Image (tube, rainbow, N blue to C red; front, side, top):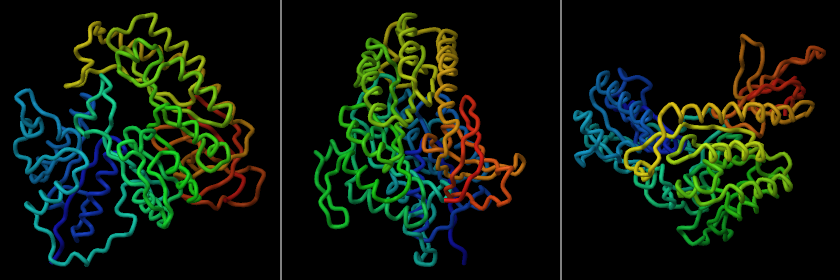
Length: 452
């Protein structure tokens, strides 16, 4: 008799992806099969995103497709926590035939719903789960979620209302997961949360144990422990608090990737105040300068919002001037989008769609030559790269530098050395050494030197 099988659709951010991995891990631990198609599944779980309107619609469409193709659907994730105007579940109102709806980071509730509608197999030991769990990323990199929720109340964001206040995982638990990932062959760990800098605040930096040693549950101590694993460690969602300075020496020494993903969102102090952000643009410029003095190779990624309610032409220009000074390496800019339940909806000075769009385009146009200059600094350097794949049509490897996170940053096309008789021997998931020979706005070109 075959095991009951569950299909899975995972949408949204890396934090939602980790939620999906945990549910899949539990499914496999209990002996369920996992199907890659609707036809092969007895039931489908859809992990949703509910942050902006486009993501809400994408999630609702995915639920509708799963219902049409399979008929038995359980919904989880951020959209599951959203309410309709009538006060009930938005998902249940739009798709009343779903079997169950839960919010984010709700593995136990999802499994309870699955048990109710698709009883688990009698022999849970027939399908053993690897120690690192079931992952949806390629074998050579993985996301490591260190906390849930957020203590900030940014006026444009509803994440705390869906994911709750900050809940940090004890450092010992995080390190056991990280060690299992490395043991499984992971070469790059991407640390994620809603606010990585605040890790441990809710636990008052309580001491836990790593390999029998007392270690505080705090960002600096966690990064120091991760640095000992001998793999790439990349930090995402880092708020620019003063104690982030403690991490920069580890980056300068090559123990942690010289990369910070810092969501500044804007630069003008009045806009940041309306956003209820915890830092000022002027202090951020000083901090960036100080970081680069300690670690000149630091790559900074950030995101910004254009056309926030009340943003004046002068405030928009202030942001452009900030970008000129800051020289951000990797930048994403989003048109401000009202989100149901967000405080920013009630702010005066809501801008027309065309103004918001024009300002977003202006930010990206302003950033383009800055990105090109920052990219050009790689030319002539011999660097370590991580191979993500092979482009057989172009005859090159697809790789990333320490300054490029997967899926959101640029890539490096690595070509064979025309003057060498030795074949390129590296495979996906391995490191190589290459000489950077050309740069573009987002990507680089390199010549292969050796396997590492």
